[in-house]
Amino acid sequence: MKIGHALRAFAMLTMASAASAQVDVIVTQDYLKMGWEQISSMVPFGDLNLANDAGVATLRQRVKAEANKICGDPSAGAKNKANKDACIESVISSAEPQIVRLAADAKTR
Image (tube, rainbow, N blue to C red; front, side, top):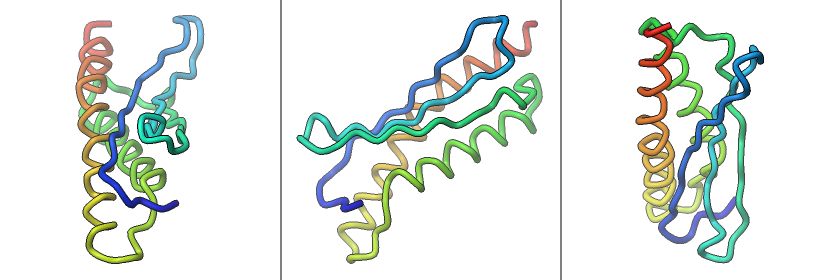
């Protein structure tokens, strides 16, 4: 995937119904506003206990890994590396408040 311009990326957490054991984080890199393709990836966390720090840390690691995957390979110089870094930061930054909210909800159950 080519990263040639500043990227806007966002992550969106979606939760299945309370009866479902599987919950996913959907990480999306939003190229539509630039006329590019949109790429989404699901990050499962239904197996994690978000009521403890280890579970939350694992979810953050999974989001970062997916951000690295969908933001592309900066193999063509410093500009592409800067764009990839901005993309990753945007994905992680937009996911963080939602991760915090999920963790808080898990601790109150």
